[in-house]
Length: 134
Image (cartoon, rainbow, N blue to C red):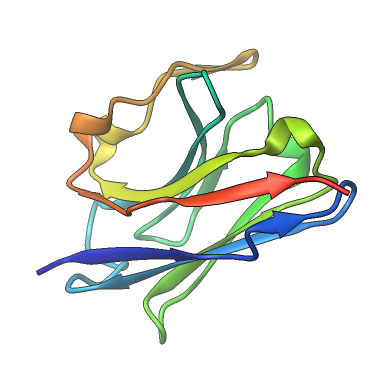
């Protein structure tokens, strides 16, 4: 059984860096053609795709968040980590990790990405609430 489990601080102060880890069990994150994404949903808004680390180790980020985002992975622990820098209260959201093939990655332009389709993901974590407040 595949499980994704997010872990993080819960509360982050403005201007700090948010670090969230997604621990994956039941499938290697190096599995061919799989993409491991971070997605968030702010109160009253739709899903926003943040970025992915691919089976190959390559990364790609939502252009609207690219300047503040990095995603890394630890294959020995089968997990991947989101770092979101210089957070503001607008980054308050439920953050989830997901895994799927290429169809799980939304269409993106320089102006941003379409809302991701949850049903395109094979695996989805339960999500964790992150609040940015002083």
